[in-house]
Image (tube, rainbow, N blue to C red; front, side):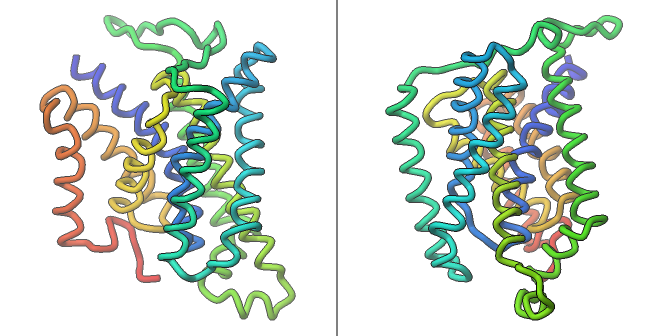
Length: 283
């Protein structure tokens, strides 16, 4: 039973990392307070559901969701956020308004019912490890989380784009003076973070289901992950996701009435001693 719950915690952590990694790129690296990230997750799940139902292909649904939400991210960043760049309170209010608009639009288009995305046949069913039987799809989510962590780590630390992102956050004026269109780099980064939210919506829609309040729940978890791990740190996002995933899973089993306290109580204690999180650095 304990091993089963450990697997549940690890697979939930992998889903949280996919979503929170996009939040880390936008909030941590670019210093943009995007409270519409949860709405992008939910909207991406609905888009993926629609594409998967039309094509009969789960993976086309995932691609469609990632691309569609990336385009929404482009509209949000280029059309709205550029006017409030550097003013966090205005960013909070603006992105919160965008979240309300996306949620109402989703409610109009898909209604208030609960939906579940059908996974491919080869990912459906259980896998057996001795006396343990566990859903194959959840193990697939764990694998995707690991692949995305490795890919993003290489992108940020080993590529020119990653160097430009980090340099642009530290000193955008100097980077621009060197002939780099840092505004375009930031747009691409925002679109990537949004695409990860959309992808997470499809992955989560297959075992957490999609419903009107799912956006606020995943946003709260993502905030907890980034705060615990430290803003702008992918390693912190991974560790934070693992901690939040395990605390959430075991908290619901052991202390169902205190499920949220089990997560946010330790977070408050951590912040008392490490205000920047486990891996956070002074901006």
